[in-house]
Length: 415
Image (cartoon, rainbow, N blue to C red; front, side, top):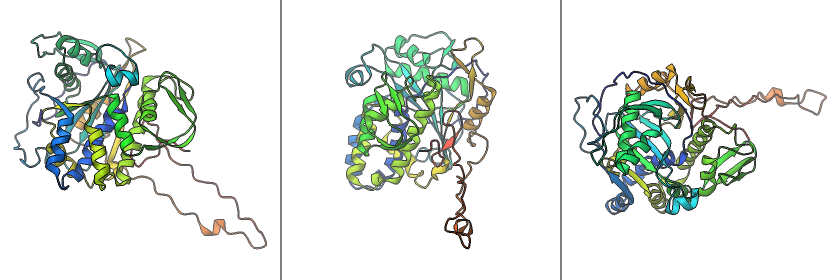
């Protein structure tokens, strides 16, 4: 899981799109951002031992199909130094125990969130690419921890996780089958994976005092337990999770899972802005609380140690927030089923760019638009008058989250 590889062209499969639960992505970003301070904090050994103990770890290396390897020796102090890193983030829809209390009891294990987090080798870019769970893709043959082997088939993307869980009976099989599916359909090497749940996300949001967001209109969803008024709001953990899960209701959107992806991306971006702007990274008390929440109820591969994350995050400490980009893999309604989606030819370009560690959209991220100060003459009353001439405000440029790529610096809603 730690070797690097060149891009491998893969035949493009028929594919489809639905939702993504933002809590998985938020916590993965939190782990990276917060680890920057741990790198130089006193008592780091004790803290690291505690936080590592929070995480469940599984070894998927024997079940993941190998990809071509690059001939470069890793840096012993930072195994990721000078190398691009791809992390598959999965949000599990496990509904038992505390998670069942939050989301309602449901048997089994499913994955409703999927995002590839790409960190460039020079640590100048972070790109998060959402994969709609209903994308029609090729699911390769998968081997389970119990020795069972499944047949290759075609189906919804999130079927891969369920296939591993149902046939292997454990997280190792489920995660490995999903990783194999991503690599087979994209040619992108997955170096690490993270699986998260409802409860840990709520704890993480609460640990930083909530997430400020612009809510452009009233939003109500009985199914998700959401009730929000228009305007600037600070969402606590429970409300943030309801916002991320809401699909049907008044003011929520068109009711589709793909629309929900956009809302989740906006939530993640707001979370990143809050972590970067507050004193979370400089206050030991807030930092420990944040890290404890970020690592609770978390399952990763065995190579995803805190030391590994710390070295990676430390090298990201100077990243420009405008170079943290969110996007959904380009898709269209599937020709075989209008209720499913398939990736378009533009998706091939995105995956190829990620595999080759160039900007996903093929260009350097643009700087955010600058605001020009008004001309004093335009706001000064004319001689003999008492009123200044009317000034037409310049419309704020916004990005359509979920449909357009946007950065942490971009505006997606206006209040």
